[in-house]
Image (cartoon, rainbow, N blue to C red):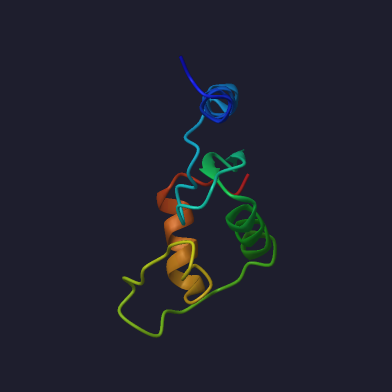
Length: 90
């Protein structure tokens, strides 16, 4: 027997058909966007970056941590992680 909150979690994850975590930052995913399970923040970041052909650079060694708390610190590494997660421009 499951509690109502557990049942809601089971239903939402199975109806999405994707992992419930963003493949880029680990926040809660809202669905599959541009080919990867992602949150609205990473979806919007990817869309803006691709539309405007942004060329970012990393101030460190191109191995920055991209998580929910630090995802805005390095745009180069975040975009690289978007592509690695399977996001496509089309």
